[in-house]
Length: 519
Image (cartoon, rainbow, N blue to C red):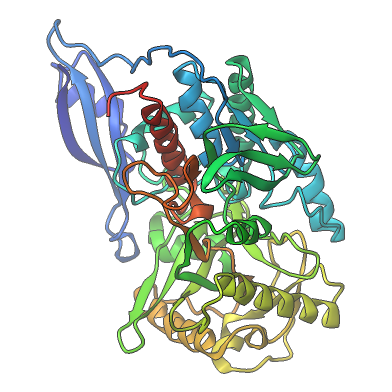
């Protein structure tokens, strides 16, 4: 059995040389975990890496072999997976590893072609309502940062990381803390996953929307496509992502059990990358080992029981227009693998309480709440620009409560920005808590309120405002047999990794329902 070694090293010390000198008994090793601690860097303390290694010492030691999956008999009806984001694709991957081919249906285009549609939108404002930043193979995560950060606890997290490596991710994805693939690399990886799935007999249909879930009573029997074709299956996995709003309404119409849930809205904050690097890494910010600096900020208002926090931080990234409707503006962030753009950005969002802020028994109240803000942003853009550009103001202007005469700083956004009082877009409680949150964040990260920093609005699609209720053990809908709510759009994930893990869980549940795996 491998022996574990755990230690810390200054960030600029070579690992291999250290191991050879300090642990001469080690004949071979694998890095299990590597994490950076740079908390003392702003005060001049040298950053350190924490390492955990698995090492072979004696001649009898061996590394564990990769898990092998028994090949099972294909099902009479292939499982149908709606959505080719991380939840849907990893559900299909795990089924295929057991020899079970499925049908994956994606309303948007494949990963390699999505960029053509999106470039037109960013440059000319020409939105394709079926293929955009949110719809298409790879899901919304394809144009974020390829972040594989997750706080869920599951032995499947390591499986997901290792599968990404199998499909072309850098080897350190399997062990480095807070790994990211970058929006450029993840597109290639997603294509490799799809190619492998096809080779295993999985059918992938692009540019095909599911318009209806077919039922007999409360049993799901298949789907009706936008082409009019009907496909039948005893197992339908609903992995549509958080922006498939038309399908939410259909689920409500057929009385699938759902409930409103809390979500968050806010802005993208953008600084110079070098400025954030210097705030976080101090005099070490130029060292190549340090990379672009990240931050995570959070504050809870105990009087209102409302949180304000950073989300989806993109070092060396870009702010993107990522709406799915022609009369709405939504912003998001992304980074490429190198994280080397001149800017860094993050969402700064305020929690929205479904039972307090929506004040409605309407299941769709959260969606309407999001839409109203997105439409206000678009109307502001049409008034002051062309409808393509994103409304923005400086952090100082926001904190002062008024616009000044200075031009806006340069931005990373390919859609462009225009100066506007973004407070016009949001309800008062969002403005109030963003202002308080920024003041608190400036205490945690002195200098965060920076004259050249931008706030770009609105960030509304942080998560689904609904939960599709399912059984905790079987993952089946509590109201409809054969329906597996999956991933972020169903309310059970919050990013690429957690959605992928949820997809694997749904695949295993299908096999258990068919009595192909021990319960």
